[in-house]
Amino acid sequence: MRFFTQKDCPADALERERIAVLGYGNLGRSLALNLRDAGIPDLVIGNVADTYADQAKADGFRVLSIAEATHAADVVLVLLPDEVIPEVYAKDVAPHLAAGSVVVFASGYCLAYDLIAPPDGIDILMLAPRMGGSVIRERHQQGDGFHAFLSVEKDASGKAWRRLLGVAGAVGALRRGAFELDARSEAQLDLFIEQTLGAIVGFSIMTAFSIGVEGGLPPAALALEMYLSGEMETVWRGFREQGLERSAATHGMTAQFGGLMRTMQLFQAGLYDQFRQTFEEIRNGQFATQFQAEREAGYPSLAQVEAMGPQLAPLTEAEDEIRKHLTTRSSGT
Ligand code: NDP
Image (cartoon, rainbow, N blue to C red; front, side, top):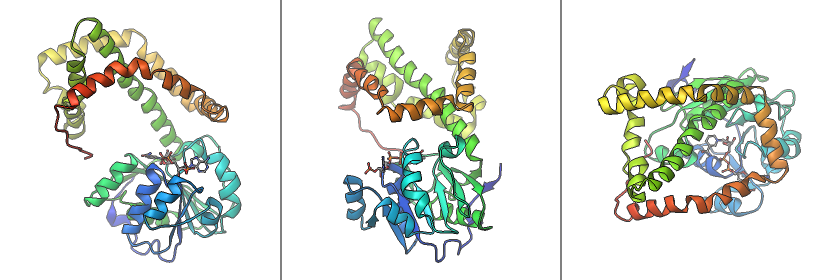
């Protein structure tokens, strides 16, 4: 994979480029503030008139409708929820793009599943951060950056990479370094890991809590053990800093023996096949089709998530009991 750092950012890449950030949500706000810090003179926000628009105005930005902001820009960052983009893009973005302009997506989702139709003569780029919006901003203010995947999906202008590296440098994505990865792979990777590793972690926490409480362990002690003490974060930090194998070797024989034995049981329980099936459904577009149908139906599954609230109440209470004794320090590094 090609790797880019700040030295790959052409100093004048965004000179005379007018930039629009469409969507002032989690990522939109952080990237817009970072772009302003980078000295981008001509920056507008495109948002529907509501609280996000009010926030953008309070932050000192000029706020236009999505269509007007698109019309006013050469570089358009589409920072709307992935499942919303197809509809808004077709109606308010594509018809207003000036010839020779560039559209940047923060995820490969819509490109991977052909949910948008890029007009001719437009550069189509992806700058997909590997970090949440609020931490991106926090780090930027500390002079630090974040990793991202970059891709030129369509180079109509012949200067698409220059522009992409210009945007990446301005938002802080080259401070820690960015890797080249095409949009299809980015979408598959993102969905696959959140639907396997992410799902397993959440499920394991809820299940271990229920069974532990049933078995007589104190709820608050379970919450402390699983995440409130921060010990588990140091395990993940060990993976990052030393590597999975090398850091696992530092965990002591009890953890190594128990971990190995239970991992083998999970393997035999068919988890491997289930992950493979998940990957296949992501790769063949079945998940994206389901997700777009979910949006069109008004997110009926959200009701199920809300219905889980009472089941999670004992865990939340256990967290609160521990938290009142803790001095937590935020660490987004
Ligand atoms: P948010 O949900 O935080 O963004 C919401 C923004 O989209 C708001 O400005 C909201 O405006 C607008 N919006 C929502 N629905 C509509 C609609 N129907 N019509 C017009 N505007 C709408 O999104 P994120 O910041 O989480 O994600 C944006 C992109 O960034 C996505 O592609 C995501 O994959 C990517 N990304 C996000 C990260 C993150 O940290 N969240 C990290 C990496 C990538 P309003 O509500 O005012 O209508």
